[in-house]
Image 1 (cartoon, rainbow, N blue to C red):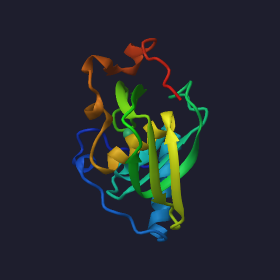
Image 2: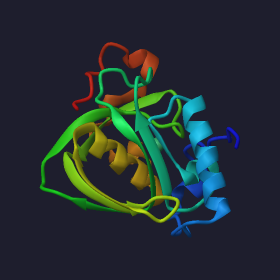
Image 3: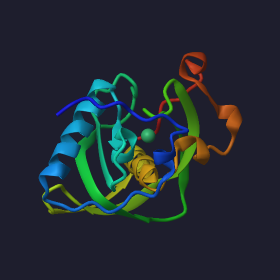
Length: 176
Ligand code: NI
């Protein structure tokens, strides 16, 4: 396993719609190991396979005592292969987001408050959860990566987008 370079916004691979992954293969376990190492080395809340240059529908996320995201609720370590989201209701809420592919920048992004996600693990076990708040936000952010979308495209007021050191003190804690 290894920490891999993270592609930055502008790289064409981040714009692609990623392909479904085949579960149960050694390659998939190796990919997830590299995603784990890379996410932890950079204090990411999550990472999607395209961010390390692999255009497959795999994301991981975890939120636990993360210095990049203080004040947010814990989210269990999760691996999603071939995730499918079902939005529940029209309610949206705003929260500040960052991304390992958009280093140094944060933006205020509206996301759906509640959703259901269905996926499989690396070994093909079913995951089916209904979540809300920050957990739902992380899932929407990561699954957007699989469809070639980065968080700046979701910002509705570009005055609420900037460098995190300059924004310090203006970013309200994210709702949980
Ligand atoms: Ni991201």
